[in-house]
Amino acid sequence: MKTTIATMGVCAPERRAYAERAALALGRPLHAVVRSAAHPLPHPRSRINGERLVVDLGTDVDLIHAIAARGGVEVEAVCVVDARHMMGDLLDDAPLVASTAPGDPRGDVGARARQAAVALEIATRIVWVNWEQVPTAALALQMALASHLNPGATLRLTRDPQADLHAGAPRDHETEVLERAGWIRALNDEHDPYMRDNRVSTLRYDQVRPFHPARLQTSLDRLDHGAAGRLVRSAGFCRLASRPGILARWEHVGSAMWIEPLRADDGNLGFGQEIAFTGLDLSAPRLRHILDLAALTDDELAAGPDAWAAFDDPLPAWPTVDLTIPDATD
Image (cartoon, rainbow, N blue to C red; front, side, top):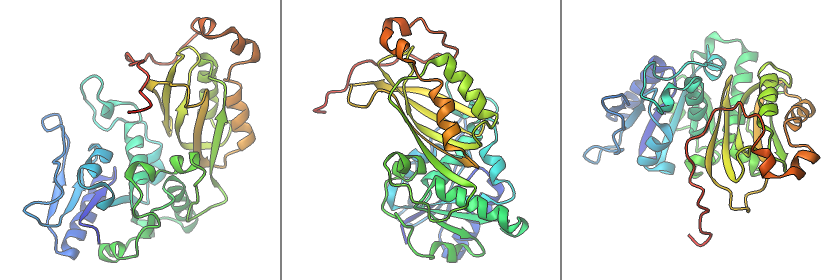
């Protein structure tokens, strides 16, 4: 078994209780990691005096950095899901923290849903508690959705944490933390969920043309209202015509949406969009049609970046972006 066991999840009482049970069953010390205004960074070590620990990662901890700081692939990352409201957690538009400093993403609308999605996506194991209280069909749907969000994770309806942690290695137990997410697998044409349900699907959208920002806003509103099915999670990379030369990260969970700049486009990253969508009862033709309506027309594309700069752009402004193109030899 891996040296460090880290529990994650936005349902704090259930997560803490599971961590306590796991520590007791395995005879390991329990270390809680919290992130607050007074202590903004988690403790960087996975062991104290050489002891193997069970680490409980608090609800608002930066999970990716916390796992990486404790050894990355060497960490057994366990996402604890309360089966009574998994779907609600992924659709929750609440912030993680009610009051934060400007620029703190924990205060974003939908940050709680994003944290729920990230915990599922970077886990090596996903365990359900209170599953006995949920109808079988709904439980099967949850597990298929989790498998789409993280195809390599081991899935367990928990009765005993020790049994969960000895239930065989995850399918991709040596996969780097950032490469476990289903959306990354979909963009790499490697998406192969272990559990499936006819209602759950993951679709890849590619479009070589950049988006017109105002029409994209209209398309997003239509998708949010279910025009192509019930979208739960989408992520990938996109480009806005009115902000040329910048590669942006597309991220959405539930009803919350973020399009944020990553870096200057060096010309080798493609021209348009690469986005993976996961949800329930999705229609691939409708999804593509709605998004294609936001792409530049022939005339708009031919007009070039000077004309694009004059487009109506209702999307949130970006901070200053470093437009220095990375050196390919770095």
